[in-house]
Structures are given as C-alpha cells and as structure tokens.
Amino acid sequence: MAKTKTDPGAGNGPPVNKSEAVRGVLAQNPKATSKEIIAQLADKGVRVAPTMVYYVRSKEKQANRKAKRDRVAESSRQSGAKNPVELVLRVKVLAREVGGIHHLKQLVDLLAE
Image 1: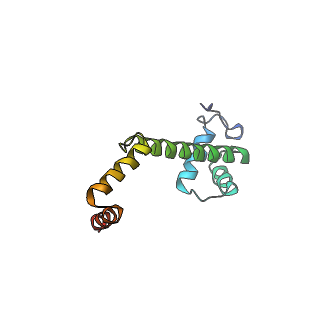
Image 2: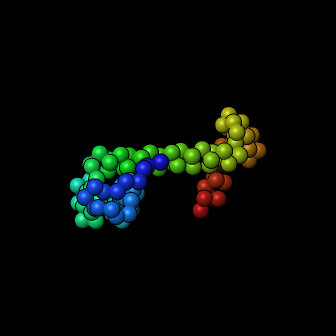
Image 3: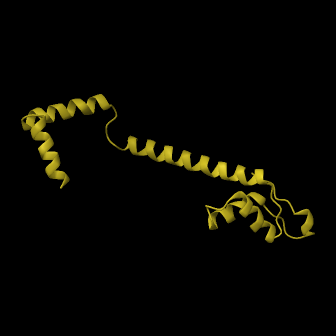
C-alpha cells in the first residue's frame, strides 16, 4: 500500500497520497496526458513525478486486464459445457434428430429472428 507523505512545499498540511491524487485526476479526465495531470496536481499543491503518473496508469490498465480475464473465465465456467468435444458431439446428435445440419441451421436461424 502506498505511504502517505506530506508535500515538502506545503508546510505541515494534511498528508497527501500522491497515487490517490493521480487516480482522482484520471477519474475526472481519463484522456489527460501526464503533463496535464502533473499541472492539475501542481495547482492543488501536490508535486508528482511523471513516472508516478505512468506507474498509476499502468497499474489501472493491469487491473482492467485482470478483471476482463476473470469475467471471461467465469462466463466460460457458467456456459454448462465442460468439454467442447462433448458439446460438438451433442450438436451432431441433435442435427441427426432434426434431419441434418441444414435443417438444424434453419431452426437456429428461425430462433435468431
């Protein structure tokens, strides 16, 4: 977890979590460049290095990628088909029951409408 520090130029003010300040500016303006973020924080009296901005952005992107992977993994677990080969075999059996793959495709097209 990030340590809280007071900004040396701010005197004895309340502690400032620079990473949280960068996240706050990014939440307000996600398309802002690192120079714009540094300038906005400087107006508030928080000095931040460009590397801090790049680091916070990379961690946010990393968290988003991990969340996406977790969502995809969860949806594949809930799909009901543990084995894709078994699913294909079941589709082939269903196709035979309805009179061939052509008829199965027609049924699927009708359901899609």
